[in-house]
Length: 90
Image: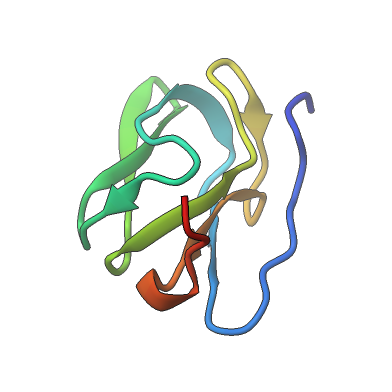
């Protein structure tokens, strides 16, 4: 499996993991980007179907750990979603 691999989350930060094994078709967000609950973060292809992986809550993307074309297994950490107040100032 290529890619940047799993990343650690601390405190109230949330690891967004792959619910299925598949191919990352596209990453729709970047590090530091604010997202809303329900917003598409990553599109995975499995069994010739595209699946939108959405944000379970609002927050800021702390670290994207996958890239277009990566293969992921179930529970592979794809990104870290920070709570708004824990996001780094930029």
